[in-house]
Length: 363
Image (cartoon, rainbow, N blue to C red; front, side, top):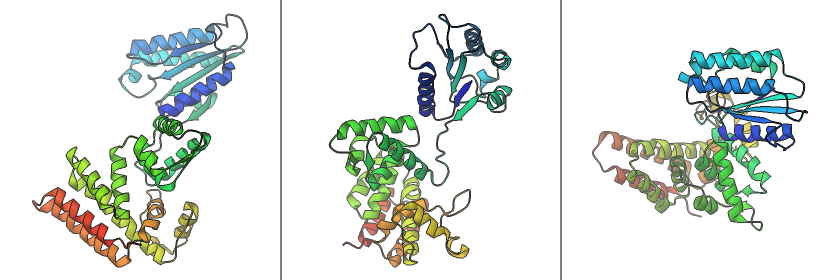
């Protein structure tokens, strides 16, 4: 018995299909193996699906030999109206009882599902009796999620023979998000676009091909502020404002975090902490005395959230520490102006962008 479970729909489908091909030898003539669609619109549908799986498990292969029964993309194992229904629970219990009695020699059961209620007896049975593999989405509400997604993207890109420029990878992560299906689709698009001759993805490639999400635009505004590219920052800000985005939201999601990360990165650099690789940079921060790192951004699980500082350290070299301190005060004033005055929000944001651009020490 095998179970592929997780909230990452794309990865679950990929791994389940790969395992099914491995178990069947890639040969499914429609007689030997059975695949049963697990999509249920209501409780009676869920009951009938479970019944069909039980019948398939109890039916020997038409031509003898081994048989794989795949309950594919089951939707009725979660805690929702259908999943809680007595009729559904009766069907799931009959399936559990069938599996618990043992399968005939040569019969294999494969389950794939993007959600399952882990409080139920069926899950506890699978944990004990089946080979279970879980593939959950990366939690973007946790600090440092960008680092996890970047590792995933690097691995998938390597499989295609691709590599990323550092800034291109940062933007790709913000644009594509954490869903592996979306990541895979965008990487395939880049692979086809670059062709066999060029295998390094540039920032312009990502801007051209990967659809721009809100998170991606917010990230791009921050990068433009870091480099003093006022025209690009204003263009993106106006695009979001026209689409109905809140100026206060933009200030707090992009501008304030950008200035704060630059300031912290500059202070850390002036303390002698620099790193060409993320692990070395994070390790150096962790070695700081508790009082010297207590004011730095912290992870919810504990420890310094080094990733935003690592991304900002190169750009921070273009600002003096005193200039960044002044910009933090300017960010505070701009935020107050947005909240407490009737000034034109667009003008307030543009003025702050101009201040940041003027503070960049051109080299």
